[in-house]
Length: 141
Ligand code: HEC
Image (cartoon, rainbow, N blue to C red; front, side):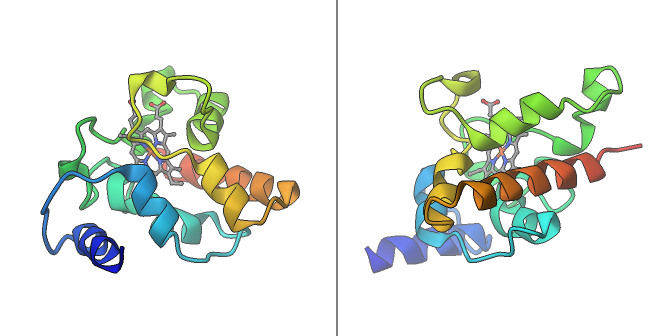
């Protein structure tokens, strides 16, 4: 178990790309504590590994995935100039009942945050709202 986590961690750091990794596994074992009030901090801790520091879909883990992580900086541009808030919210929250965009590689953050916040629904909502606001803030002009 420890070894496995270490391998995953090495992959995240971009030190090696030993094997394809299960996204949910990464985030349930390694999601570090962050402030629910900081969208930026949460983004860097939970999203940048796949989506890249600037949201361009070029994080160090991206190469290990079958589905390329979405370019989060062009969401508005690809949606007629309007930020697709609902779509982003549900992509982050995830709906375990729906086969979201036919891919299981985007982690179901709703579940991860629920565990992290020990079921505190208000705090889970705050995390998601601040992440959505952060993703909105990195839209290419
Ligand atoms: C393990 C890699 C990984 C991590 C970590 C990850 N994502 Fe994703 N994400 C993906 C992949 C892959 C897709 C594309 C899914 C698809 O198209 O089926 C995606 C899709 C998305 C989408 C949908 C974009 C669209 O066009 O509708 C949003 C929004 C998103 N991610 C936001 C986030 C946020 C915010 C975080 C951090 C809380 C995050 N992702 C963390 C892999 C990841």
